[in-house]
Length: 113
Length: 114
Image 1 (cartoon, rainbow over the protein chains, first blue to last red):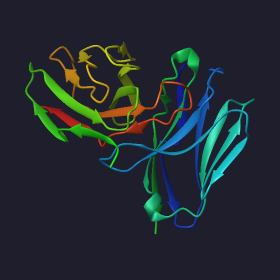
Image 2: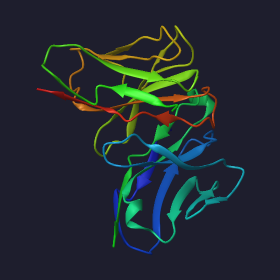
Image 3: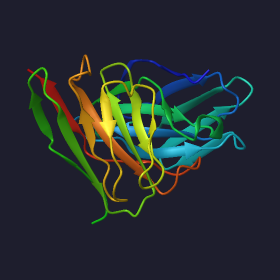
């Protein structure tokens, strides 16, 4: 119930292409869905986040799409750049679980130039 | 600059020894967290604290201990009871523990058992 399943485990995209990472959850009480970006040897940093009352949120080249009925959400990186190469984590939280973040397993993205 | 400082960055421990990882934040955040990161497993919550002198176990607390004597500090002790302590440890903080509050992470500490 508290799991967030993330796919794919790794992804290779050509420069300028679209990177898509998907996450699925079971607990319908989750009410906050952030995405974090992590570079090697560094701590994760918040990239973008969404609440279930909207179906899409866009910030620059990064977009979260949210499908409440399917209990899925995804990160789209438009015009992917080599500097986007990093590990991406989706996460979710709910007051039922003390508002602690539950993380997906991560996706290693490599953008080829 | 405001942020979260973890030290040391790299630490080697002999089996049977306890080690303490430091975490200090100057963001005036109430909530602090410790996560463990292993390849392919994402981040798993070890302990968290909502206020000074209070903390709760996370999902993988066995073999770890924490204290929260000051708002700014949340040290993690990895005890000899932790069976597989080699990992990347991340400290984090947020303004409160309410849903939607951004969690900020430190740079992490690498612990290796030799």
